[in-house]
Image 1 (tube, rainbow over the protein chains, first blue to last red):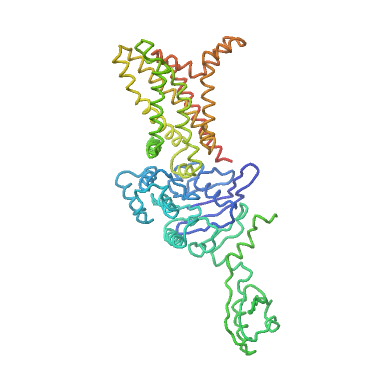
Image 2: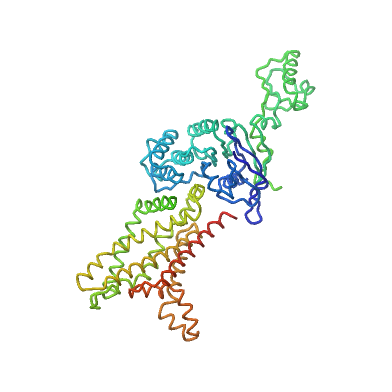
Amino acid sequence: MIRIENLVKAFGARRVVDDVSFNVERGEVVGFLGPNGSGKSTTMRMITGFYPPSGGKVTVGGHDVVESPLEAKRLIGYLPENAACYPDMTVEGFLDFAAALRGLDGDARKKAVGRVVERCFLGSVLRQSIDTLSKGYRHRTCLAQALIHDPAVLVLDEPTDGLDPNQKHEVRILIRELGKTKAVVFSTHILEEVDAACSRAIIIDRGRIVAQGTPEELRRMSEIAGAVTLHAAGAAADKLAALGRVEKLNGSFRVYPKDQGASAELTRQVVELAAREGWKLDALRTEEGQLDEVFRRITLPDTVKK
Amino acid sequence: MKAIWIIAKRELGSYFTSPVAYVFLVIFLLLTGFFTFTVGNFFERGEASLAAFFGWHPWLYLVLVPAVGMRVWAEERRAGTIELLLTMPVTTWQAILGKFLASWIFLALALALTFPVVITVNVLGEPDNGIIVAGYLGSLFLAGAYLAVTCMTSALTRNQVVAFILSVVICLFLILVGFNPVTDLLVRWASPGFVDTVAAFSVMTHFDGFQKGVIDTRDLFFFLSVIGFALFATGVVIRSHRAG
């Protein structure tokens, strides 16, 4: 549904988005990860037609966002950063306005508003003005606006930002559910969200895609992926060293496989070694790899200069 | 067309959900009354016309119209809702026109609420009501021209105060180049032809005809082209923010 080819956005001499290409199909939820200021929001603004690209091309459902913006925008539901809504309107008035702009009339409009109100649990605040709402409700109101025309494409810019853990959980479940029938792109800098909601993740840093794949694939890029951590009475580092590089972690040992593919084998070898030496195993774990470690390694923090 | 109306309706509604609209209406009516009857010597003039009423409008609007229009785009940018609005299936010019029309309708309403002054003058004497209608029409276009300028300055900044000051300065300029005391000064060191050319860009020059009851297409064309130009400039400004 979304095709992005060699997308570039420059503000003056600064290239905020630099040669980004990816596709999103129906039934996919793509998580867009990256540190703050890496170009996530800018990319989303180009997908939704708010920023014209400086180079490259975005098509949504076959419509070029620059050449036929109205056709493309009709297919998209968009939750902007910080869930900006008109503060002086009531929730009902705001949703009605959004539905009207989406070309819904009369009964269809009423039905659409009713549907998203139910879906986003807004029934209790319908007649409240938006500036009196808590952050969670405001977010949901803006999300409801994005869903009002049942779009084929959803672009969500930090949909869980500023929500409490329960609300985050609800939003993730909602995203996963919506992803079954729609093409969803959402940005986040919370790594657990990738596991909770995404079928694919793209990591972007300084405007460039630095890694992409399923959450499992990304985790496997981690240094500790496949390593075996054990806690055992009597364990000795020099015996373990025969199997691979050993690291001491207060009271336990971590053995890294000699090559990345051999992790299943390594686990077996460690267990056999422990049995042979008569160590009393308390705990043994094969590491899956950690997303945050991958993330830190491939995206440089702002404070580090290249 | 429909999108323009939907946007205008929302905008107009947002005037009335805050107390600002009512405060503005009251201040506008008080000031027009004060200027007409006290400063303008409406009763002492002894003539059945609204010259004392309309004569003050360019100056009154100078402060009041920017106060109405300053929030139009500045607020939208500050709150980030501009992103929401412009990613809806509407074009930029539909949004610009919708917002402009809403504020213009609001100003028209304020102007319509001055109707007691028309009744007063009709009770006291026998005025030429044609001249009064022309005056109202001119006043409405005058307000529209100021408003379009304010829309433009409002798009330039996130800060409403800056938008306000900028538009007051521009509108003041539009008044002064055709204001008699200023043109009299200019004549001393510039050719009369030059002064006339400059004065042709003034709202004063073109508002005069309406006050005399003359609806000249050239005057209408002037106001419409100021509105058109300022709204076009608004579009350019909004596009340039996004183009980077």
